[in-house]
Length: 225
Image (cartoon, rainbow, N blue to C red; front, side, top):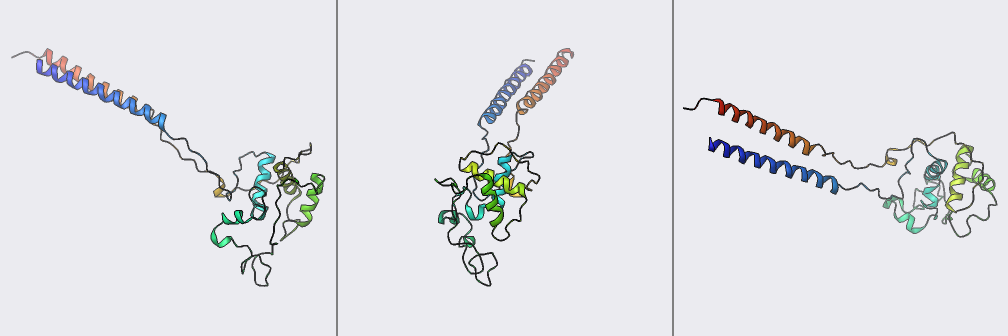
């Protein structure tokens, strides 16, 4: 009887230790789980939510139609901006690209593409309407006027906001929403929820202890030889 009781107490102590260790490990994991962070990629399509704002639409349309030449921040086609592209895309005027040769595949682009964000803040355009008329008649250079009016207006407002210029009070309602590509949706790492692990260990240990209590009770009721 004494041996059985000593064995029971030893198992009870061991189960208590395991439950305490499991509870602490679960708590530590929850506290130390890293929070996913997004790294800025200047070439990635801006994320577009389900109900985008006018500014978010403008950012996305700018990426689709202006970014490759005018830079992700409106800095223009600088050497630094071209350097972040893959190596085979860094020389825009190479043979077969945009140099203006007869056998080039792309439309010709000038050697210097001006910045859209600078100290002058597009001072040559007195209003959003003036900038809109200029863009619609000249851009995109390969097919001027190919965008809808709402798209041009949204891009105009976005570029004006990049220059911290005041916007017109009347906000156009976009009728076309860009379709996000697969790369535009950030992939956020998920952390497995382990909050239920300590509870599982507790209930398993409780069940084992109840089994030992039942066995001990049965043993006490058995006739002693």
